[in-house]
Length: 182
Image 1 (cartoon, one colour):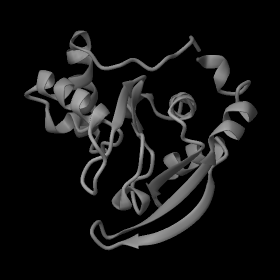
Image 2: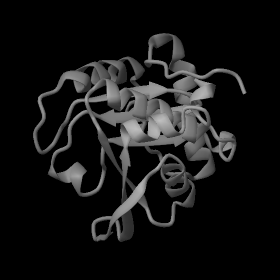
Image 3: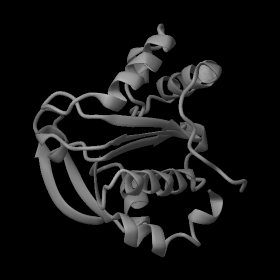
Image 4: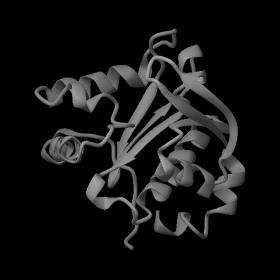
């Protein structure tokens, strides 16, 4: 596997980004970690403006500052948590193209995300996933995620699980496993 790195979304990646979201629709898969790209398919430039705004928004109960990156998928890091994110979203949302799943990319994606968390002073990353999303929970566990809470989300009519990852411990422990790819 070649060396991978997160890329900040830009106008030059417009077609790739739209193709990425359309693949989720084609496979009937949930879209996670895209920084709301799916809301901007007809206005990619508007999405780039949204990302810029999102990176510096003052936190409140509706919005928190966040950064979005491309890899073989996407990753969204919330730099702080409001009550809503503490109870169902967490610091990191991520996704991999449906055609690229089960190849180890999401573990590298999350590893790179944890490196970004550390740069921004996040020492314990909180992540949530649908209990039935075995791929996502496996990714979190593979990087040291510890199940800390399970709740029933009435709004979505699903059970969701919260994992906590000690950022520094994970980056050190898994640098030879996942860090070698980035």
